[in-house]
Length: 255
Image (cartoon, rainbow, N blue to C red):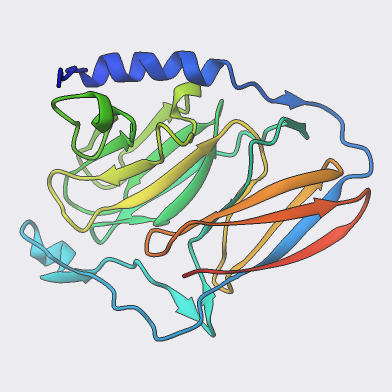
């Protein structure tokens, strides 16, 4: 079987074409509906991962918990909830994705960003931090003889001292799709730095809070697919239909 070797750069270029064709029509929403609810996990609490620190233990400590599972009263924090393939609705916000590097961790661990906004990284430690943002490119492993581990690096940042801040634009090709996947936060100097960013070109996406709760408002009446992702569970989907002005409650159980 013939293998095709695609470089990360070529793979990203291919993404441009598929993303640009998607399109989202923003405008006034009359009689907007609201979907609100909770994401739950029922069962024994899964074990978190422990990271062994190899650099700067005086700042980072010798070990750190990954922070993968934060579950209280069966309610799951840090689940991404979004409307899949929504075509039109309210304007997209430009709120930045603020990531703080503190005690050799990236906080928040899970974020949602929007095309046209920006990533803002700040170093709160008295040591140098390096950060890489890696776009999944899930399809690339299928067509390349040399799959890119963790995806393609879209930004490689160095924050040399406490207070250092870097801003970078959130571009169209950063958008989450089934082919590209999400963005991982990685570091080649501190293993404990990690996290996830999902980028959308529509505003109907959010992250569950400490109580596993989420809310999305000003949604045009219609039928939608509600999608939920968490790094430690299977992705779940639920069909939701909303009418004008309705407040729809949804409960999603992860497995």
